[in-house]
Image (tube, rainbow, N blue to C red; front, side, top):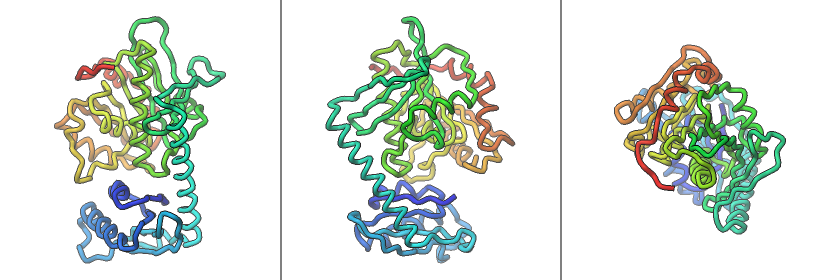
Length: 355
């Protein structure tokens, strides 16, 4: 797996120190930042890979001369003695990739400004759809400056019902407001209780992974709070689950909104902050989590969930099922079971919150 990610400054770049990327690019405002960031990377690499001596030349710099208004652009190659295995990316391809990434960032920056200019407050807009059971909406988050497409299944009657939030994998990202519904229908959730269902879709808001996740998960909470004003949602029984990228977003939904969800079921996920110095396991205190992964998953290693769950075992109510086989499609076997379903719907939020 090879990634190209444009990052605008050192502080934001620190968010990526825990990601396992062979290629990681960033934009530096000043050339002197190069050595500072190299030192951070090298320190983090040795922390994660103690088998290498402190003097080993693990990381090497490859200068790329692409320059735009953000400053000088570089590329870093992670190398541990096997450079030829990965090959290199040419400066011309790198320049095109970074400049394209910067264009994406500009696009979403302009869109954010447009949303903030046009919407004085968070707004839900109904869209036309040929699928009446899962109504089509867009949520304009005036605080974050993003448009969040979503599908919503209502419940009949006026009695309060729980809400299930399903977060899609990376392949369903975008703004078509359909593919996340198609994925939801194919993963095989066999819900045992009548409930509202929320299917938000993540567009690539800012062009970088971690800040997109943070924006996405904060906007989902705002959306739920607004939906709860119009629908009889039992706010003590809001549940969240997701697969792959959606599994990661499920972890971050808990991390960014402690105490908000009654229970969470992240599958095949990852948590990039697990080894960060600032990570406080107490953020997950009182959370109720049932995670799942497959040992033979070649897309996202099960080690990520295993390591995190070990850290949380004395902090919260947490279960981890590790399948011997199933790869990156283990969610179908997991979702078909009844035990997680019954467990989830039996949970209630630990703390009272007002809406």
